[in-house]
Amino acid sequence: MSARRTAATRSFQHVLIPRIVEMSEADNWERAKHEWAYTDYDHVKEYDGRACLCEYHPITHLHTITNRLNSLEAIIGSCCIKQFMGLADSELRSIAYVRGNPNKALNVSAIELAYSQGWINNWERNFCLDTQRKRNLSSRQQEKRKQINELVLAGLAPVMLTEGELNAEKEMVRAGK
Ligand SMILES: [Zn+2]
Image (cartoon, rainbow, N blue to C red; front, side, top):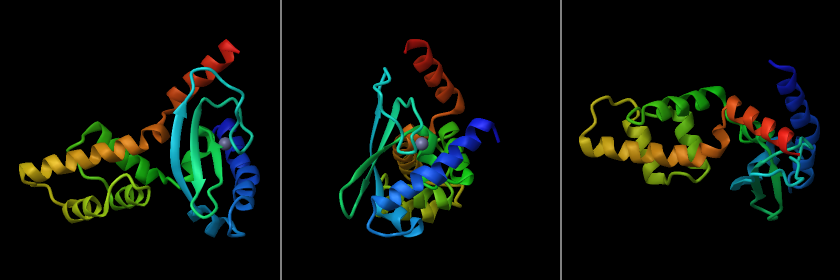
């Protein structure tokens, strides 16, 4: 683990989590996190002074999360979004695999993640679960799988920034301002 990533994890735990709990109806993180949905994404070309809820800045990838119960909103940077959404490495790997080959099936936890985030509907979720282990799909099923994979990739695109993209963003911010 790099020093920078360790620091980011600390800010997530000690700054972001208490603030999210503060803004939630529940009074503990395990319950509070389920009140929040991923609702918007914006990428600003020039740093406009905003910081992640964890205080990390500059951020130019702005992920908006909204509390379903009290409608409060918060902005989170790339530093915290994967952890906030509870994205496990296995889900990220599965999704990266499908990005490399859209004819392949997502794993079960990636399918459930996409459904819980509203990127795919219930019918699409069931289709994925039913056909997940099948190798020989009809051409119509294959088309459907590919289409659903695209929905999942589109949903996750802003969250899936690579380390290289993040570094490029930081360089740009440092060079410009
Ligand atoms: Zn953060």
